[in-house]
Length: 424
Ligand code: UD1
Image (cartoon, rainbow, N blue to C red):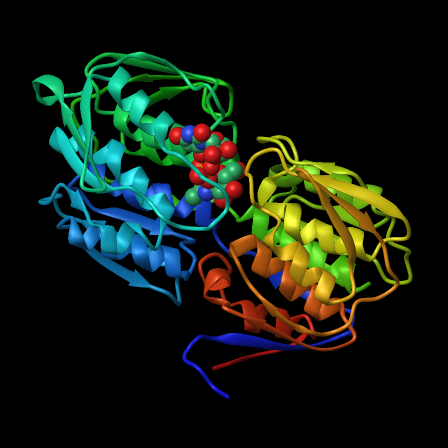
């Protein structure tokens, strides 16, 4: 029976083998696209991945009054013109949580903003209190009205302030950085996120004329300027896409070389791959993982903010542990409810047991194909990896989750010798 929700059919059990070119990082592209709110000048962004979330961000920018041209072939987005509306509507924000990052730049640029409270991946409660409290520390008055966050800069312009983030938040840090660049005075963000995507956003903001110091450390200092100008910026490589293909290669006992990427972005993932007995080679702009004729060893994983093991690689690594020679554990410390893939992997023959925020993995020699359901972006990546490794046919339902974060998935997997097709 057919429906209009896309699915993948995967014939597994064949080792992946070959090279795959890594795309620009979704999680860097989204804040950088929204940074265009901060200037009416032309922004020319390259290495912008062709993803559903990128299209949503461009639609959001257009809704705010900007003109956007995106060429998915070249990955170049040109954005220009002034922001004329202060509202990021529920219709867009509900499909992409990252739209909350319009709040900081809009309030900084216009002096006010209305942004719907976000939806996005169903992984835990995911509050936005840090974004709101940080803006308040910069002199914004904030009210929640009918599901919208209304922010107004007292006196028409945000003012620099000191803000300590109780919890390390990636988009929270990015939102506040984008607000602070146009503030009157200096802002210090303490306990800031160290993620490479934060650093890439800072690089773009600096190219626009912002004064930022300390990005990539827990203390970011920003001296506000009156105006920013346009710039050209190329988005950093996607470390999670890189890690996902390396794990897919390992889980199928194959060989995968990721190009146009940077090993320095994912050292914790690389060291866990080595611990799992995968032969990893690194070059300046490539990483390869060779697991041909090698036994996968079990590895214990605990997710943590960067440079710790990324929560966005937890589900994929669980598949590797599910196929390892022994027992291991995967502990999730960032998000609650991020184990929705476990029940699906069990249906494919994995021996996994959830105990609180830990999954105990008892490795099995092989998985078998089954019909499974995606619940969020990285969970769907884990199901595709499991399908590629498993004997027989796997059908992964609701792959719209995966389309939010992985560019040209089918063609990339096919170029590695995997058998995958999209059907409805
Ligand atoms: C970003 C990434 C996401 C990744 C996550 C953690 C983007 C677009 N998304 O999400 O892929 O999984 O970082 O690396 O970059 N928190 C609060 N209050 C807040 C904000 C966050 O309590 O105001 C909590 C969250 O519930 C979570 C933790 O802080 O427990 C970290 O979340 P955060 O880093 O903000 O995740 P995102 O930025 O949403």
